[in-house]
Image (cartoon, rainbow, N blue to C red; front, side):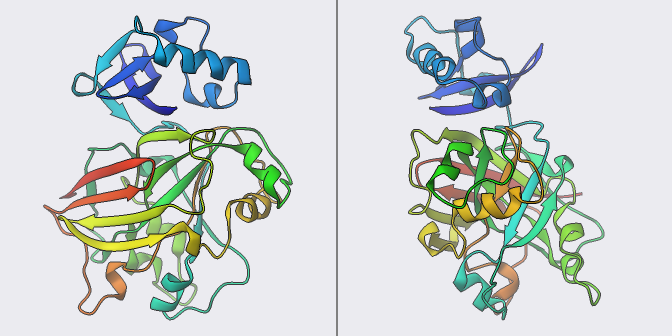
Length: 288
């Protein structure tokens, strides 16, 4: 299924994206959760009922232009990120190929939905784009094995944009990665989450970013240095992963800071992140 979250008068509601409509799963079948995190963590029988509701010709549905779209997971408990996970991207930045995942975090203040504006901070002068595949956790896990069973903990995948203020990320001798990644609006996600039963191979997906219609990044997740099981194993040794947690998996080559001349985001730009099998995440850029 393709799942999304929309805002209704009663709060966020999980819906299924079907064509040009969003099916309200709980309104169609009151036994279904209203929260996407609860649906991701639900039993196979509940997920089957959700799929049946999405296909019900009498389903309660809304036209896509009638609702406010939220990030697929509006309130994740964690947003964890793996940097330098494409060999070509590490090389373009003059970095050695990492021998273990490079980690940083974002916070919920960074999350925005498809269509919402990325705000360029007044205090940042080098804001860059980074297209990414995002893993969405579906089951609580600690010390997850580094093998195929790790996929049991994946609820689905979505498109992500790891917007980065390079002048803050690389300032000082210690290189403050997290602070450069956590300005408000710096983590667009969406527009939908594709469940892992539908998107079964995350390691052969084309990942692209277009800036004002021009392709700037274009690679494939087969270029991952660390694949999904390795990332989940590495992270879950330290932190228990919970349903709805987001894991940004790294960006391909072509980022603006490494180009000559550099290409940095400016007010009026439009960014599109496209991940094969998921969709297109589009966000305008405005000044703060």
